[in-house]
Length: 92
Figure: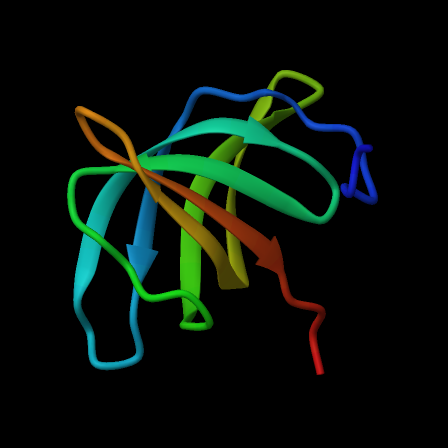
């Protein structure tokens, strides 16, 4: 049974993940939905951690930089990297 609220689509982009203390790392996205994103990381991240994500999208052929806050929802270790799933947080 599918738990996701929105359908995910393939989405390959560089994603910069930033923490409040200023640490930033480069990840690769794998999929995207209206409520979250899947990414691949060389370094582990903490479930429940709130982070900022910066990535580029094309809107009607025009590149646009997105900056969104997200919460790490799951981290799975694979033979070559960590699979990271995040939920986007709404502005408060």
